[in-house]
Length: 299
Image (cartoon, rainbow, N blue to C red):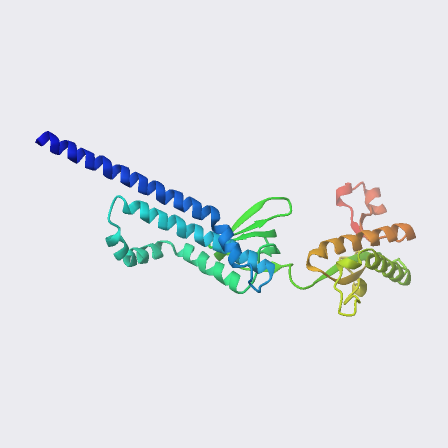
């Protein structure tokens, strides 16, 4: 009789172990399936949303991050429930949460900062931004805790949301390209002005699609000489500034081509662009002074 009872108990224990193992397996498989298909569900929920594409992608990325934490936590609780009764644990979650809150203040700050970043649209997925004057690149992810920035070189930076203090966003309606160039005092002002006007007109013709166009099809602010913005510029000469309103993603192309066209025009017309030059005084040479002690003068 005792042997029969032992076998019965052993059978019950094995059955319970198998049932728990099967339950845990089902929980993990369900969590895996939800994790795999949650992107499609979230994306489908935004199919008919009347918001711009950048904001839509940002919300999708944030919801992906949020659902990942929720799925992991719920799955862990269900697995834990197979071994112990988690009801008392959940009942005391308020006290435990308070204790965790004091120990995880930075986490709470990151989450709150992340929501404000999204709510105020300081940056969106796909924007080209400068963060804290330290990291510059394209926003790839905006999570609950961190924002991921990909630099032009390919490096990826993860920045805690609460550490984002200043945001310089280059992806808004319009940008103004500002290019400066300095010429020596000896150059003819009229010749320089004509050369710059020709360079601006050439950039306008060759890169028309990169600029902001009004309702009538005219450029709002084509490449143009803003004027003389410095007559000393650390002793080098006279500084001219060229400006133009461009599309957000075109500002670097426009600035690059304005510089190149000006340089080419100067080369073709024999006009010098100011640059530092080292001049050795005759008195220094006669006195046999070291070249390193000579005066440096700007053209």
